Length: 129
Image (cartoon, rainbow, N blue to C red; front, side, top):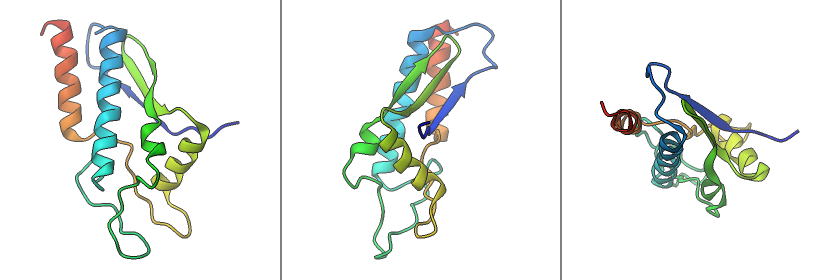
């Protein structure tokens, strides 16, 4: 049984389906937004992550592999799953999300308000609204 760290993004309030390709694009945008924001050391609300044990800022890019593994796992007509390609990256992400007894939580897998607005805009454009 593998470790799974992912978020399901469903847009239930949309009366018609935007299509799988539009939802895949939304998922790709979500992953890119999370990577960029996280690499700058910020969570979805724009707050800085808790500093490292040395007091220095943290950007969760030790090797870069974890964030590079963030991708669209599945897309349907009405939703998208964004997660990690490998179990190793998912496990590391889980440590950052929830923290450990030696490391504070640094939740980073979430949509920023700006990303929600872009996703809804993309979906509406696809639906011609």
